[in-house]
Length: 154
Image: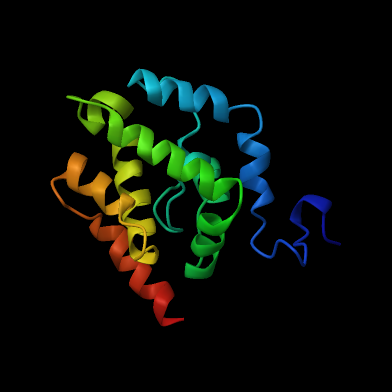
């Protein structure tokens, strides 16, 4: 028997509701933290999702992006896509700080992998590449690129 939480809705085949539910009570504070230039609380996995296969915690696995189409749907979602771009533009507006200063160790790597994923699918939106250029010296996350190639081949 399928649990209600495991049901995939026809209008939401990638269960993007998991992200909107997670962001419901935390998005405003996450954005405020970014505007202050310092991430303090735990929201990275569902604000800046990564490709499946990187994270090992239950939270990382729950919010992992499992396909190129899911990443596109996230980016095109009227709430999630808008919020992602708002957060990315907020990060780009921060002056004289490194990603390590803003996010701390490990979350700066999660940012890099998330931006690499979305840069791969958002050719018409160079904002993700701009984050990689500004904070990671134009470097892309190698493991994300490898996993992206695997899901592209499917």
